[in-house]
Image (cartoon, rainbow, N blue to C red):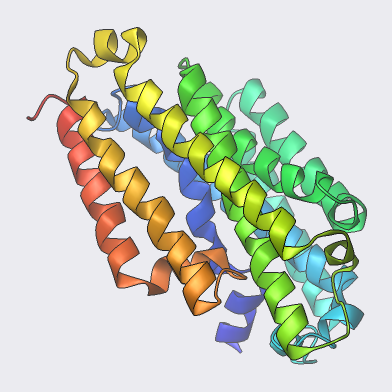
Length: 292
C-alpha cells in the first residue's frame, strides 16, 4: 500500500519542482547554506502542493481514467485507494504545505498560492480548452522558477525566463502529441476531450517552434552582456550543446519510441538523458562558480 500512496501523490513528478533551484544556481548562492536551506524548503512546499493537485485531479478524472489504457491503473481509478482516503491525504499534504510556507516570505506565499489556484482551475476547466491547456502547464513551470527567485530575493534573467517558458511549452506539446498517438493507435474513446482540437501536424509544428525557442533563448542567455558580466566568463556558452542534445534526444524518445505521455518517467528512465543532465549540471556549476 505504501507504493500505492506514493503513486497517488506522484512522487516521481517531483522532479519538475527542481526548477525552484534554478535561481539559486545562477545567482551563485548554491553553496551558501542559508540560501540553500530556504530553496530546499521552497522545493518541499512545491512537492506537497503539486501532490495535492495530482490527488484532486485523479478524483475529478476517475471515471475517464477508467477508460484509459494506462491511467486505469492509477490508485483511485483501479479502486486500490478510495476517494475518501485520497481526500484525507490531500488535506494532510495541504496542511503540511501551509505550515512550511508560513516560514517563507510573503512573495513566495503569493506565487505558491497562484500555482495552486492555477492548477485547480486547470483540473476543472483549462485542460479542456485548446492551447490554454498547454499554456497553463507552461505557466506552472514559470511560477516554479519565479518562486525560486523571490524566496531567496534574487533577480532572474529575462532570457532564462524565456528559456523556461519555451521549455515548458515544448514538454507540454510533446505530451499532447504522445496522447494523440495513443488515442489513434489504441482506442477510439477520447479520455481527454481537448485532443479532438489537436492534430499531429499542428502539434509537430508547435513542438518545432518551442524547441527552437528553447535553444535560441538559452544560447542568447549564455552570451548576454548581463550573464558575461555577472559570471565574468563566456564559457557558459559551451553548456548550450547539452541543451541542444537534451531537446533532440527527447524528441527522439517521443517521435521514434512513442513515449512522452509521462514526462518525468521518460526523463528518469532514459540513460542518455540522465547522463546528459548530469554533465550539464556539473559543467554549469564549474563555470558559474569559476571552478574552471
